[in-house]
Length: 318
Image (cartoon, rainbow, N blue to C red; front, top):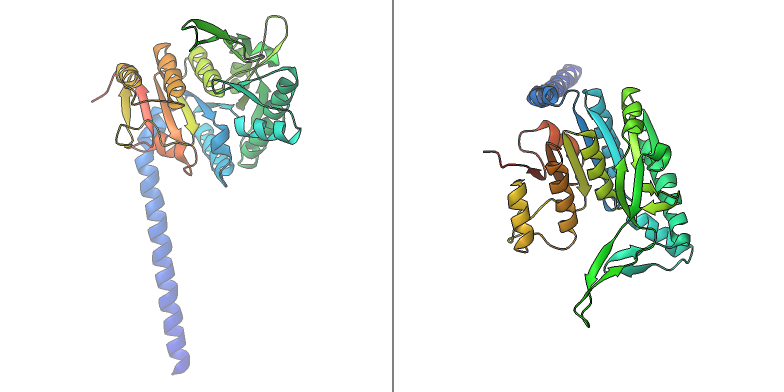
């Protein structure tokens, strides 16, 4: 009798486990069915993803990010990655006892610093991302903006108001630049080879000098030059917040400009939103600011109805 009870209990446990497995696969099938229209919508579309240095620091983020990029490629999307690395650069400069000097919140980059910047961005960080994508089953090629003159840069000209004189004065930031010309042939060749381009935001000047460039700015410039369908800026915030600190899911260009003007968008979010506005005005269909620390946030944004961050378009959609 005891043996029969044991057999009965074992059979019941197996049926329960089987039902649980079936429910799990039904849930997976439902998710795939819901995602299918979005997958078809983005088939053969070009997207540029800026992977922020702050987002990289979270545990597990690199693995999830790489999986998202590989799945995007496998579903027919052509992703291009531009990465940052500000915190990692700062840590390396500190380790080598090279002093960091900031002017109005922007890092002054002298010759000693630019060598470290290039080493960190085009070296360790770039290859870590390439390796993560490869480990996730993709094929990636790491390049800097100097390769093939992908990013021809010029010195960044910034000004500030002198509080003593009331006059505007130029800021010298050393080897800090901005994109002048984006030669997309390098990226196009990589994409046509069924690989994923991973770009370090280093530019080359007219005389061969090396420039450190803000990764958001590079991502926006690359997206505009490629006429990408989407620009994604992954960072360490949820997106654009209103005055009550609630996420704003969608903005038109004009609404975004108004929020900058009235102070709702402030501090470090201003240049990110300005990058999105500039990209959209130059032909990118839409730009999105996302919290890169959320697991699989790119897939949530692309393949679900509700999205995950703040999307900026030329005009608001009802």
